[in-house]
Amino acid sequence: MLLKTKISLENFEDKKFKIKLLESEKDTEAAFTHYLHNHKNGVSQFYKSDALEHVKNLFEYKFPKEEVTDSVAEKTLQSLIFQQENIPFPAPKNPDFKFIDLFAGIGGFRMALQNLKGKCVFTSEWDKYSKQTYRANFGEVPFGDITKDRTKAYIPDSFDVLCAGFPCQAFSIAGKRGGFEDTRGTLFFDVAEIIKKKKPKAIFLENVKGLRSHDKGKTLATILNVLREDLGYFVPEPQIVNAKEFGVPQNRERVFIVGFRKDLEITEFEYPTPIKKKQTLRNILETETVSVKYYLSETYVNTLRSHKARHERKGNGFGYEIIADDGIANAVVCGGMGRERNLVYDFRLEDFTPITNITGNVNREGIRKMTPREWARLQGFPDTYKIVVSDAQAYKQFGNSVAVPAIQATAKKIIEKLHLCDDRK
Image (cartoon, rainbow, N blue to C red):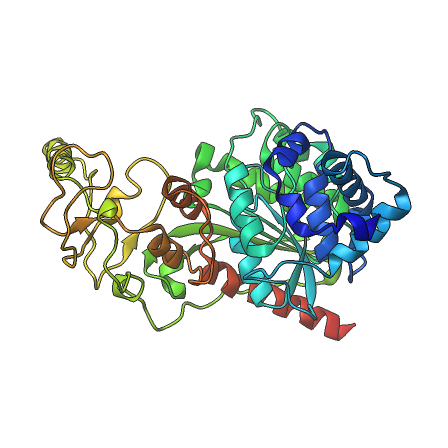
């Protein structure tokens, strides 16, 4: 049967089959891809059962007349291991440590830690478009909603580092001690629950700068109390790390929280020192003429100017901004004025014929939005990183991502500490 059907990875790209999978209670597609990428490291046992179910589902869907036995599914699964597609960013062949990637987005944490010879053994992300981008670049489909027990059940044991860029939410801690139970109903609770059960050697959490002042400081205080007192981790004071200090021309400040399991007897940690060489926008701008679709219409340019003028008269600083080539970009964010606060001048365009529906003519002042690829570079993603979604989704994904170089510099310090700890043993 195996030879007759000539099963291959391409069979798993059927859109109707994927729709059928979405209706399933189990995340068999994610288990299938995680199994293929972890068959050598002992982690595959956590995914094998549902990976086999995924293969059976495929047979039943595409070859309904074929008999599907456990033996056939097993042989098929093993043969598919050797058919893995060429992906831009494969895991290192001889990894030094294992990590998991929660709230993974498009893989900024994964990119950074793989660069340090880490092996990702579990990843989760609920957004379907981010999953597409993640799969295209890393060859794995992330598991879904991490708040679900069935998703948590896939997480393997004995990984070294837990990474999570979790959303910021307020806790109901009025009159309480601000501990583990007080975080229920928030996404941090799910992160803490995983830490409590799996006890990784180290944790690396990332959040927006506003976490420090969120809910008058109660949110961060509760997080630190849970990590230090309830979960038993040494957690130095969180630090605000700016991406522009680590090799990308973007003013992006984020709170980094690092922790080590107390039995490792790590009692000090220094965040990375900013690099001396600073980048400017010129280092990441497109070298070729970009499409006219990125140029603003005259009508929109005038609207932005009027909007900014109104705010200035009120004493507000809100409005669009055109960044000079030797300048630093504002933080890229999805929604709001994310793109309009990072406009650039580019006078290379010669054909001003619109290719999208705009009001009025294309402006002749050279004012354009940055491209998704330029946003990718602002976040430290290499040009080999695949952008497989629409521009609108790409802007959202890169706006939500972590800045890879800042993550990597900090993760390097974490891994150095863990290696020193291993050496002592």
